[in-house]
Image (tube, rainbow, N blue to C red; front, side, top):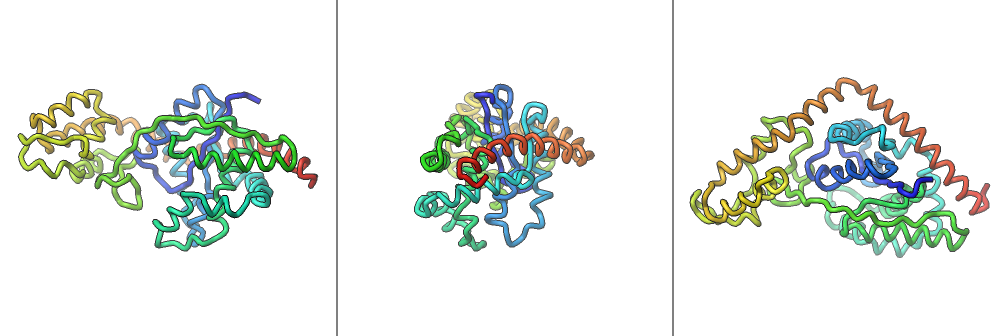
Amino acid sequence: MTNKRVLSAMRPTGRLHLGHYFGALQNWIKIQQDFECFYAVADLHALTSNYADTSKIKDDSIDMVIDWLTVGIDPQKAVIFRQSEVKEHAELFLILSMITPLGWLQRCPTYKEQLKEIQNKDLNNYGFLGYPVLMASDILLYKAQNVPVGEDQLAHLEMTREIARRFNNFYGEVLLEPQALLTKSAKVPGLDKRKMSKSYGNSILIAETEDEIAKKVKTMYTDPLRIKATDEGHPEGCVVFAFHELFNKNSEARKQECKQGCIGCVKCKKELTALMCEFSKPLTEKRNELLKDKAYIEKILAEGKEKARFEANKTMQEVKKAVKIL
């Protein structure tokens, strides 16, 4: 087994936006060059909160994989698969749920936060409470030495490490405690300055059309203290400038121009639109080509499933022998 294996996953929510690209996918593309990568469509995780309406999960999964391929995830370098098609995820989840203390799950910060924030769904179910155990199963099943995370996600990974440690204390050294592969990721604001999210209606999709980009950039939140184009600006709090930092190689010069009142918001938005359209055009063309061949997407997922199953089965054989149920 390589000493450079990585596991990462995303819940299928349909088409992805620029927050996903700059927050995670950009790192996935870099990582696949040097690591053995397993990238999972976490459709079982989608059931933890979307159990009442599962009608979109399959189509959303395909849309998400198309976006992965659009931005440069390479099925020749990474194993791409659906979590639900590898039954060992559910098997390991069941076994690990037997040894995971309830208090660990109830104290999980994300669990508490989402119970407060998500008001339109009933999340008082076992699956949602136990999602950190399912997440741990995803990682431990492939004996991934590394998991790409930002500093704000270290607590989630530590839960996985604790579960692995507890299992090994009971049954012997079988599961590998993963290490954090700390990755830098840009925080992408939404059009209204809040976190970019499709649920907020403030997102710009990967491979967005030029017309949609232009329309959305026009609505971006700008500096409320600027009345005239010649007024001194405050780029640090401006969404338009936040996107210039992502797309404009001369963003530092733009920052000074804004501060000195040398450019107005309308012109600044027009220049940003041009930069974003230039970035998006080849992605749009690639995505449209992928959409013409859904069979190719299914072929990638079928091949990924077999590779994932092979590795997952090896781990489960070890786990079952350790627990003495095999």
